[in-house]
Image (cartoon, rainbow, N blue to C red; front, side, top):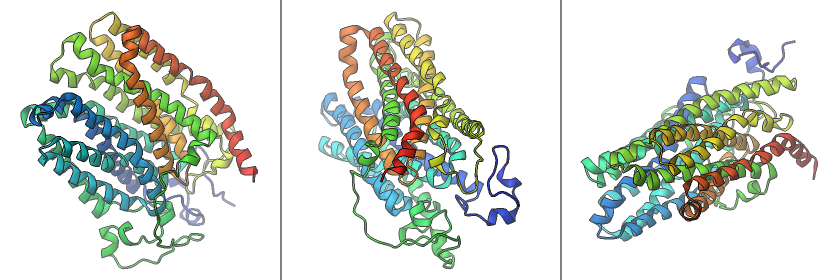
Length: 491
């Protein structure tokens, strides 16, 4: 009798149609559909970072046109970051309960309207308020994207999809400052927001018409008929489908749900998830400080103009994009190697039982090389600035820090999704809050530490903090599976 699981060497297309139909698929979406869905969700997630980084070159002209100080305009950056840390907590909980589509439509509508308002406003009060509204609309898109990927990709294939997501989101920090500088100089700062309005309007139309509902609590594995806003235009035009087409799945009831912004608290209190967030959050903090130093230190040291100031973000961005894609492939490879090591057969059709799989070991298997490389490169970057070497040296080191830290973000983000498959969006929202809080503290301390210790010792200190996370990686790899097993046994 043929087995209903796929070994590490088998491919789904090698299975007979009879056996495939005998078991519940993890997702009924085709391979082509899943890739289109992942690209659409990943492109949507790019708006959060793009809105932040494209704004930086416009700070001075905005202050001049609105007759206000640069310090006050910088407060709109702070308010944007505060909202971007809080809003996903509401969006993530709603998305896990009511579906991804309604939240995509709502957030992009808010974001589209905010950008039009920002392009037309003429007062600081309007700028401050609309920037927070813009953040509320864009900041949840990364949370939603992680939820979508958890919906459609079984654990054995999830690394590739998260790699695509991280590749898109890391495009924004490198292209945003360049794009913002060119647009602000050639067309005026208002056209930054018109450009964002045009892009988001097109994406809103596309998502409304074509993006399918993927939330497993709403459409199961994709075989249930969605209702209301969860339907695409195609669903409305086609004749009504039979609600349940896969055995064992029942159609959900439509009911009102009030969002709980504290839903992620239980995830933060979980030891496995908390360690994952702390590890990823600390590296993200140093990553943010490295990026902040480009605009505050490199411009003064090397006397850069606005265009050059934008171009210096490219090395870290390119490194991050390359690392995101390659790390996604590596994660899937490590998953197969871990399964082979423990004699576990991989089920690509209906997904593996994470309660019996050492997922912490699989996802962190290759974390040592990027972690150590990023620590060494961060130290070298600080001392390259301290000794004012040729600008090629710190930018080359930025390429390595950008690439290796994004690799670690991809590993931690994928692991957190694996650990919280029922509430992936809420888990990412909690992670986002922890990450933003740590990064805000790190950036706030950057200048005082540089003033006290000089830039070389400052980044040596930050690299030392990253080094302190390595024992946490060891603990999570060795004890994570035991903690999950004991939590399932405890009443």
